[in-house]
Length: 335
Image (cartoon, rainbow, N blue to C red; front, side, top):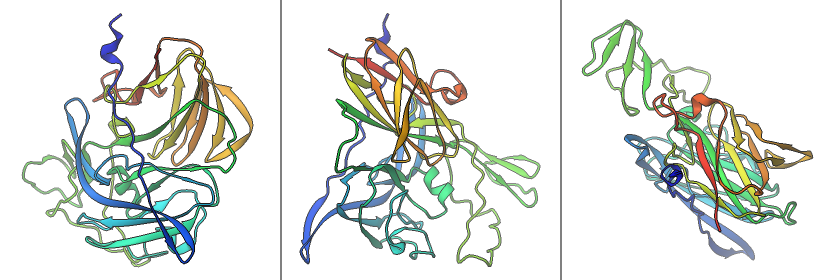
């Protein structure tokens, strides 16, 4: 049927290799993350700019085992401030990455080391916690996977899927209408077409609030692009399976909207939510993944072919409001 032309694009999510060091009789896995500006094509003809860990979106996967002592060294190579927060994992307060509560933000050229023993296993993620809604929307996130000491469900292969929405244009509200070069003016609303622009020197910044050490400019995103692992279809990577295999897929929602992940002509078992085994696993073909949530599924590959896997909010399966696109990838059987 010629389906090969719409399979997708190879775009593997790399895993970060740690350096193993011994200090004071302790073995430590050391991971290094640098925040850098990035620019990439999210779908054909659409280029976006952001910040990426190690220059990529999503950042590289950090995979460890329950009981490991880890150290994640964050270095900031951008003009903004950043921190690192490992979502959903028990740790000391000063390792939690919340600006002004557990640490000062990391300035350009500075580094900060996050060190703790990983005590709770499961699927999670890491992200910047400075101006959180804005910085995560810039691509500052990556998977954080903790394997349990004892495996709970056998599987033959696995995939991690990070779900996210991107605002490829911003709308800013001004206190009064004013002419601005190369801007279209609509009363007090000025629309910025094209890729995100994060410096608007002509705009009046909001007054500093006195109840927190630092607050940030208004951020009013308009989400018009939907991505899996930083790409929209047809740039999403297909997953490959063989008949008879059990396939584990980890869904991680790093965005601001719920997504309803659906597979054609198959059922899957929901085994974990937020890194924890569910008391009663349920067979489904559509599962909701809310903002910040993680859902692990186990799929029986028992129906050979090429099958769509997508968010069933169909508006999320478009590029520039044109179907197909967005949160869609293919599951392809191979020999």
